[in-house]
Image (tube, rainbow, N blue to C red; front, side, top):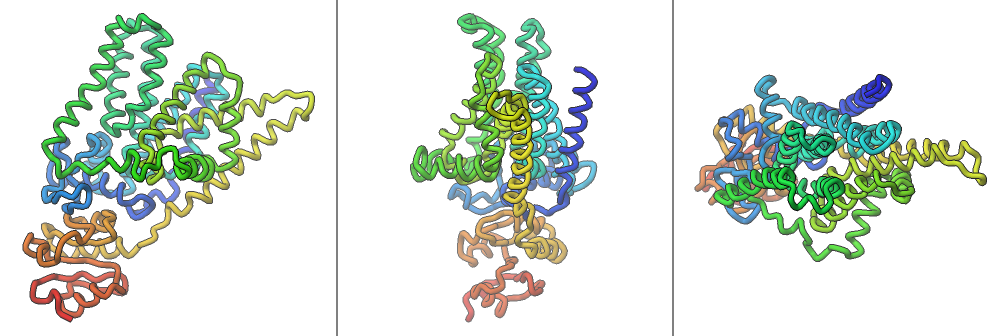
Length: 479
């Protein structure tokens, strides 16, 4: 790598780090805090209860995830690779939300570097730098790369997989690069199984090099086998703990939304065209997409094809949750970079030679401005009272107490209490008491049921923001 390219990467990484320090110390009560709380609680329980990566637990004992009671709090979604990294950081610092967010930030900085390296294998340094720059600065990407979620780690693993697999194909007698490819393929798939869709570019690269000979290529088959085997073993192991496996069928095609008008509206207009890229960034993406194709661009098209297959298969998941689009950011950044480079190189007898660069700069500026406008609310703590109430619970209640912390099923309130329990009232209060849970904390002081309990039951703590109640069968049901 040339010195000026190294300098460019350093500048982009510094910008990426600087942007992600914005509100880095915010509590887990921001956008999609429920998913962040579930992820962070696994790491916290490793500290509190012992390191058990093959039997991860979180704080939710309710039946809301799949209809089954989960008194052991099993959490079997992805293998806790990312959670382990947070746990290792917390071994040094103690439980600290800012440190957990910084773990994701560091992961994203590595992704920025490897995105540059991957694109540089196919394109000029300008396209590589612009790709890394857009990945590092798109406001949507900035927010989600400071959240406590496994998605950014999966993206990093995929980019490292692409890079090392390309290096392997350059010299397929090099077992080191093949081994590294297998390792990062496993990390990607185990950390978030949807990574399987984004392995399609690896298949393209293999077919492009070996053609029909791929059928007899032992190393490629070894790569496939060793990539899928750990994931299959993990899925088989999970079946022993059905209480901890959330229902995921609704993520596929709930309401038969696939290919309906709402499907295209939410994914194309709302997510890509408004939230993630904004209309201006989407214009750069389209310009990059329709730019003259080359052999090198086929790899980028294979990335885009992976995104499209993923959108189609997990149709309702992508419509419901905007964090499901985290994996497509590198691809969008690449095509935005191609579009920007095309505008800067625009030569036309019709237009002034400066028109292209000026248009590109204007589109980029408005992409950032409009993008920040869309995501600024994601940083807000809309219910700060759950943080205040959680600290009170942690201070006033026994460490081994289980609590009811209802917030419509949102586990972020429960996480703030540093206790296990229930984020939703999914059974009678009498049954809660019979099962050993006698404390309820609420921030909904206007609820008539909470007001009735507060009048008749023992109050452990109360302010204008919350109430902590000790339940007993004698006080339930009184008017």
